Image (cartoon, rainbow, N blue to C red; front, side):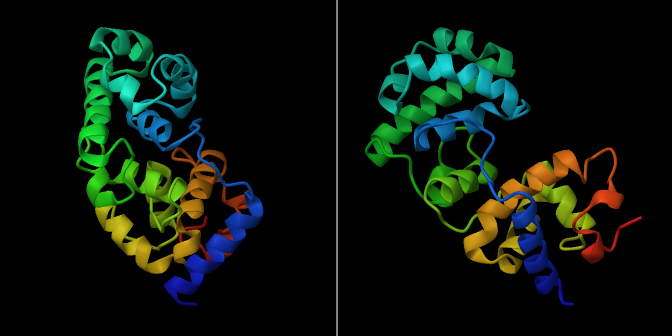
Length: 208
């Protein structure tokens, strides 16, 4: 079985295990997903979801966030960590969306990564979840599992992204990333791989 065939089989198996593949961050539009993802850096999605309702109630759009007082944004997001840097980024992101993109969250990785604090991981998430484009979100779970399955042999996020975009069916790539996060939390965890209950054990070269 070739590497690409194993990848396709992994996609099919995880699709059966997790038919509802959704981002664990809660949002209602592109702007909110972008902001929530920026907040999630070095912070759990669970914590972000506790913070964003109040944040978005006060600043639901780029237009509102662009005029926010930094101290107020800091107060609302303080429990997410790195709150001063993140507050500055949220306001700068919002201003640039208005001035450079006519108030619309851009739909390409190249444009998204011009926004303050936005890297390829965040850009891929927005492109995949909002604009339904082929996307590979190199979450730590995704990188770990792709290495364990022998799909890649690197922990460099960009190298993993480039390798997996060639192997994954384009229309399945974004959802596969969400499914690997769930799988990585429940089965193939960072601390221990529970190979005895792994649906992918027959295609895994690292099974024990």
